[in-house]
Image (cartoon, rainbow, N blue to C red; front, side, top):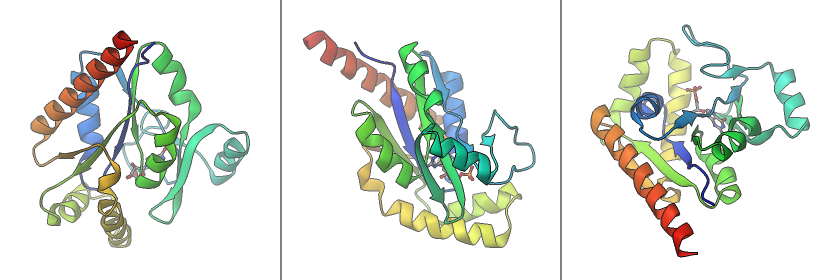
Length: 197
Ligand code: 5GP
């Protein structure tokens, strides 16, 4: 039986990946949800605990890790911990809800072998100068944080070949339609595999 899709998405800070994912979830005709990760990074103004992330202390994070509650976890930008709780994925897929993971390249490498039926997409921009400009526009990051994120962006872009598809997010509407098309194609393909059995 085909489970609802598991979609792994990565891309540098400033690529507009979160906005793209939210718009895609809102426009999708098939049920989709963004898995809510846990993180030890401080909450930004406007972010809500349990909606944007589960904001956990380092102690809470380490305790859940020891309990085996994470599908994967990583230290991102060389600083804070981020992880996908198992409870954010399997139950939903079994109930027919597709799950999108917004995770970094390290997390993606850990999840890929766990779900061979995944769809993986890397989100990038055609003009490298735009990453930094978008991060500055956000207004919530210090120059030190921006510099760290830009260094990570370079390392992430080196691993783009690990993904099945790349979406250029220069234009949001265009990128949403491309992602919806890829999800539809992936579903048809997986169902085709089932029918052939
Ligand atoms: P931000 O701090 O801007 O919300 O996210 C920083 C980076 O952490 C993003 O590239 C995002 O994809 C990644 N990230 C968010 N949640 C997770 C997670 O659960 N696991 C991993 N490995 N990376 C994550």
